[in-house]
Length: 231
Image (cartoon, rainbow, N blue to C red; front, side, top):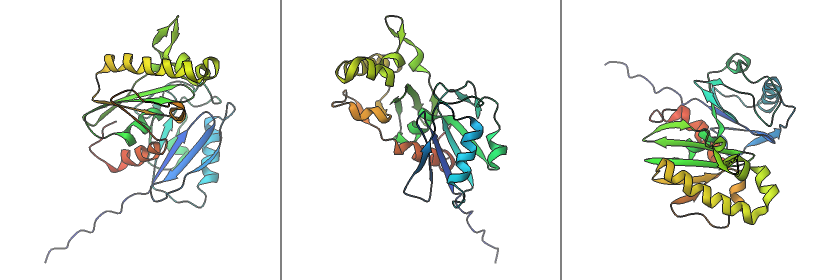
């Protein structure tokens, strides 16, 4: 009788969510995340050192990194606004010695939030993250830098600085207005509003649902485990 091939073992995915205040990780076989403080002095080399400390007793096979800035074909295109220098050109694959995928952090959370069709993802955090997925093809979008009001961008109004400057009530009005403008521009079937500051929205516009930061890890896993997703 011919030999039957045993199924390939499912790789353990390490998902890394790099933010302006914390670097967070979770493995695909775990239920709890781990985190360390990041901040404006954390360089790319510092991030790798922190990852080594966090994972010294946590083996993994492959890595997804969600980076707070533009990424194309696993290449970081610009330095982050809220972290230290040294990210552009840094060789994470060699530093970590693992197969690696780097994507924009909003895209990673979008992939974890996706339920098919045309989805627009907006992440309310330090800035305004955005991504769109159309029929399983995921595309990061720099919508936050587009002009919005009085010569300022969507990110200036909807990001952390805008929330602190204008207060929650006015910030909420700007969020609702911006969502409708971006809906008209992108024509999604539905919108997911995520990021840490979505917690400050008391009501959501029609056709939207609340995201969850945990979906960033789900997206990091899915980029290795779901071959239908193309990012």
